[in-house]
Image 1: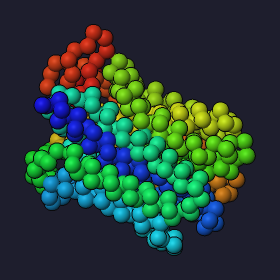
Image 2: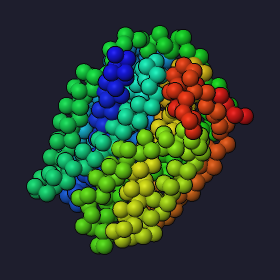
Image 3: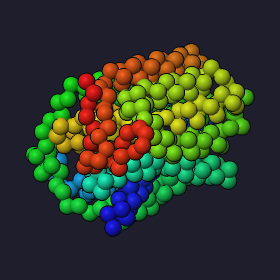
Length: 409
């Protein structure tokens, strides 16, 4: 019974992240090229719209961290899922820059609340059920949402639908996913106000380095993740890949958490984080240094195959370092991530308009990722203590993936 409940919870988390993050946040990437063409948007304007979403993401993370947040976590989670679906649909009827910015900002806030609260609820229940490795199922939702929405957008474009229809279909899909998540996620009546009063602050001295690394990672991945489809459309040698490149990105992301979880159980979370940053840096570099079909596909696989793995590694390690309510630490990590994402698209859009390409901002992203990896290596490693509460059974080789670990100072 406990195992079935754990799988049900992980599946509910998967659907929640697919809706709010995979669709609500990332569907902008495949819809952006037809929007640029139809509305004659500059790269700076496109980057500003993306940055508005990430500003909302930062504000949503801070809201989720507020200890006085009234009501239950589940109610806030489901409400935020509904807001994400509504703002996604609303993009199809917006016609001014102010409306685009407002809708994407609100939608970004909703997506951050979903990520923080869904992760807090799901990771807590999986730890109680002694199935922490099912966190890979939860975090796979982002890649699955990206792939499903990319297929949907590609099909609608193939049938000749204009860009507003792409938002309408994405919003409806997100709304259906919200209903499914509500049916699957546990209805545990825990007040966020009560949790906030009981929890103490997170004071582990390793946290600032991890948070800084996470923020640099946010900057490092987001330029490629925002503009890769636009770059593909604007490059004659890769234009034919436009309908499929975002699908490749999403399909690479879906199993990536399981892969990097496995690597983390053997190398340690910090070492795995550093390796993933280096791999992602290679992908970002390939997106601009190898302007051919092979280079573009490699970039989609490497960036798509690492960004959610890095997200999971960072959040799980932060939860292990938390000395109070893990929701606060998850929110701090998400806020740092949001700051990196706010800077990235706007910076890339302005530089691209002035220099005529994304080479310079992408190189800045490469350096940010390498610095993030170096910072992660300075966070104390964990020595697995399998068999303790919340951990899996001992394994013959490697470690375990859960909270029960001892820092190696």
